[in-house]
Length: 128
Image (cartoon, rainbow, N blue to C red; front, side, top):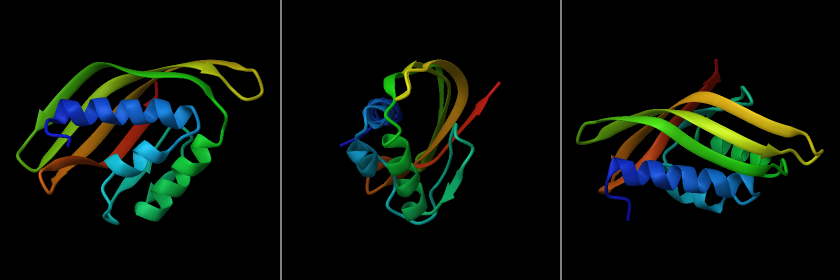
């Protein structure tokens, strides 16, 4: 069970690295199951609703990226029911086509407490 907001952020990035390796299973468990979730990721696609968000992660996990995702400069703001984290996401790796990628992006992840556990309700990234 994910008790603290920092634990939820750690679980988010562990799941993100699994997604990059082609397995989105962990993402299914950390995102809210409600239909008000959204994702605006580095591909620029805005996904709204559980089905659309999970479909986007299915596409991303199939990209064949080999690499790592790390969150630096984390900052947390929290209330009893909602919280968010801002950070710098740093990605290093190789595409399926053999292209090396190094990417630093700003990210905001919003969490909501559901049944005593922090769940992701929105994730937004942008390049700078």
